[in-house]
Image (cartoon, rainbow, N blue to C red; front, side, top):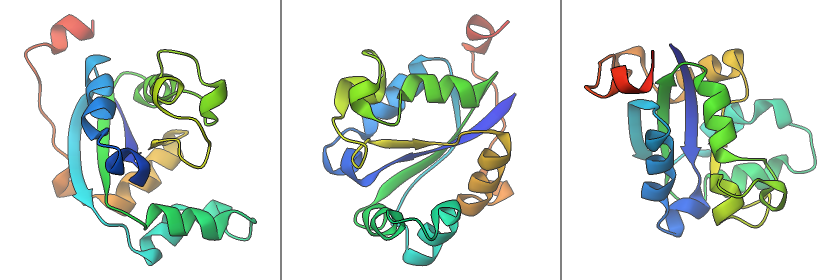
Length: 149
């Protein structure tokens, strides 16, 4: 099983879309193994977006992600990273396919509702930024045998 991090961003929280975002990911068959509502501070935002430091949009990313509470979660499942990214849709919502979260609910890159880790190394680093190992649960759901072979 693979794990990945998602962040339901400030625009989704302010628009009341937390449930819509999480329900699409759960309906896909992914299992939530950690979840929290939090306010990201500047130091954590800078660590999270460290690969963008020095780019013209870095300050805006930090300002935005710290502007409102977010919901941070860890999802688990086979090919979870790819499954989450496909469900979320392209970074630019205008280019995101209909049926994806961004394709259905967003209009601009700067307000694209949800962050999703882009690879195994990134997922591992990002999960560690937001959750202690003890906060990551392992459990089986009754439906799991109907979702995964």
